[in-house]
Length: 337
Image (cartoon, rainbow, N blue to C red; front, side, top):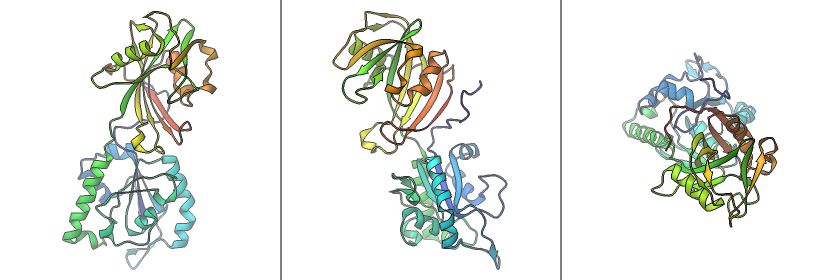
């Protein structure tokens, strides 16, 4: 199947950036860090998963040279010159997890002085990495993988490295998103929208739908929500989209991250009526007021209304500010929930 847009959504693993102190002398590919990769393979991560989900970079994006057989450490001036590049890279990649490698990178990542490695390895921190993102993400430091390093060969430090790798293994797994549903009622060249009167998204044109309750299937939730919000009973449903929404700047306890299953239907009983929560209205497809809707809607709704079935991921930098999105074709063999 041809992709609708070029970026792959990857897997259920967190998008992770590894930041060393300098790039290797020779690299056959962007992930050619042999010792680091050996550590990652040891926790069950494959080469394909590395290529899909991980970005390798460093405080300075080059090899600073060597002297008497030892690799040179980048100077403070070199690191300062590269700061904006690293910051831009972090912002664009928008990592869900950051792994600083080596004492120097760890100190810059945590915005602290040079800590002894046994005070950072085997621990997880929540900080704004390299003061680049403006919000905190989990940070798991690793020691420098250089063969010249003696630290990681000491018995007590081998245990700390193993502890760090186990933390990494656990942290890489994405939390299962809570599920919600959207239902698009369509009548020839028109689609039903509803003005949200209260709660999350009040004042925006929306679609009917809501959270899936415990014990419900997604289809049952779509039928219930549509009945509650506009008083109609759905008679058929076709899954047209699976959309993941992420709000990294919003505290996790607010639980805004969610996966939304979008259904479309042309069959229902009853006439849409206004409720305490929603005021429904029919719009011609060419007149949909995207400027009065969530900023993601204009990217996916035209596709499904044109007959495409899609999978999407939307990342917001604020409550309604869409930072980036990825869209690809939905697997037609995927089962409805």
